[in-house]
Length: 307
Image 1 (cartoon, rainbow, N blue to C red):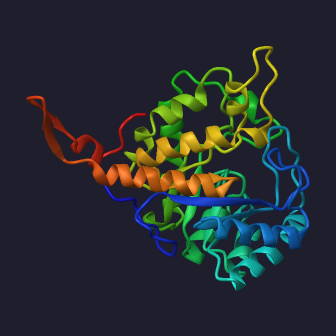
Image 2: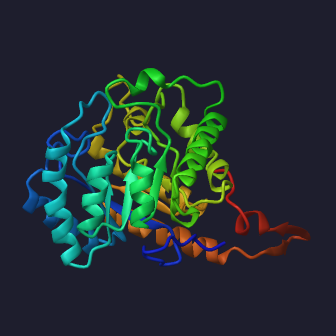
């Protein structure tokens, strides 16, 4: 199985690596390290040098509890950074829930719109994306950051997230978005309870999402469920920035399972991981025999196995 291609974006024949540039003062993962535009631009270029295929620029924190910034402030933060990176031939995506910001970013040269609300936060977003003719990440979302964790109630998280994403896809298709431009994201950490295993269930059943027929983006990097997993014996949670090795482990697994792209903060080790996964996938025979027993590799090559 070869990795799905998305029009207008790199096609290396393996899982892509999307590097994160948060042009915010309050992101959970980097604490405003790239809030200054010049630092953000330099960081984006550094991520490309480390192996990023796409650089995702965002001007609004979506950490749990975050309050929204104004549209004007979001535009002020992201547009100069996008313009500068595009001038250096960097493939850029914009991380935004606002149609006006998405339109300005595309006009500045962004090639992809990464909307964590899947078009729910701004009903104009699908129409703007459709008119722009750029790829669109539709993420599973149940509400804004200030109260999203109160909505993390599921009977069957995999089935419900899959069904809700499928409904969002139908909605954006109805607004004119080309199906070849749609990318799905199960929304790890967004209205998912880290104490009840929601995120792990979604990762373990990635095939539930790849089976919908669209490329899948996975954003596990430095999420809260990793800080809980790696907590000290006394319960002290691992700092976000010290969860990068665990992120690399997830990258290896989801890349092997058919993810189209991983969204990460540290690029180089994740760029290594997707290449390792690609080499192992390429080495799997369709069928072989060993010690008199026959094995069929088609389940790996024609679909995405559960992890």
